[in-house]
Image 1 (tube, rainbow, N blue to C red):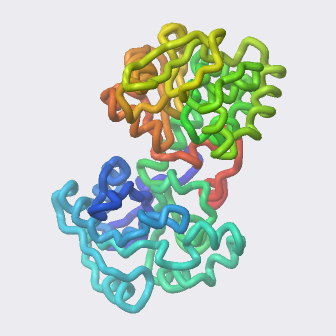
Image 2: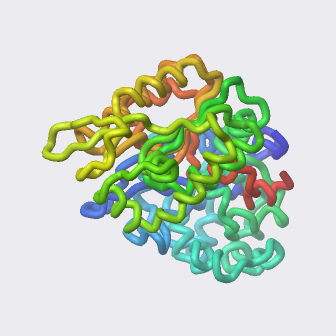
Image 3: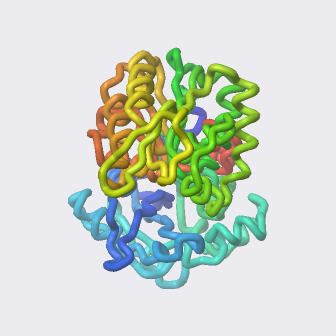
Length: 408
């Protein structure tokens, strides 16, 4: 691990600023958190620092301009953290203003304070990052950094899921404060680096889902570099590959792809099939659910007048065999519309195969982890990444601003 660990910091009696990613899905009707996975993942670092007597201040984001219904205060996060830690977690509905600074100054040894949602600050939202593009040096002049940095002895980052974000809270404190990686960031970097640098063979990538940009952004690199020996396609990504191979899917599926502006990936898929013959597996049969009952048909029988929602039994069996024989399995994206009965069989069976294999297994991405948690005990998976975009970029060889800020 090329980043300093919290084990290297003498935090007793010192003020420590901890950036975590506990951004959680929010129920639109109740405003309550519906999944605590990222909160759970943050606990080891929080507990370690508090137990060692740090005066611990936690900063985090929740939602964004792109998912505004999730842009809420984080008071309920403090309540849930306190319950899980078995110790008080203070909260103040201020981020870096006078009230927050006064509360920070009043902290005692081992006490924990959570500040409010970072994305209440303009400098922290993704559209600001996209449009303004501050340098690391300019980050020191932002409202957040200039108000908080002078109050702290150390900065710790444990927010791998936001590692692809060049925001002040992620990369603005390292030049000003002695900095270290938290337990989660350390585990994420170690596990994913192991996948990239020394995968057990054969390395099988199971790529599916609706967010096909993730699959396509990594596929060229992992095939070109030999990281992936085989790519098994499913979900909408698999349907795009079928279209690229000359299969007419049928009007409902074609329209579904067109309405989501995914047609542009057909040419990309065709290029990958031409460049890497035999290394990309396509579904050989698919499933539809026309009137509530699942029906399967071979690809040779397409097009269909119904929307394709899953892979079929022959494809499932073929993929199960490849997963069982693999040395490494990486998964991003469910095999079908797993939320609905009749459309969930492919996803259910893929996760059962991943949980049962003797291969080293690594998964990540929002729908990926949600579908895995629905069907299997994720404790049977070697590494469940909290990252979506960060994970994809790391695996595909793109730079991550957080790691660059740590000099990696």
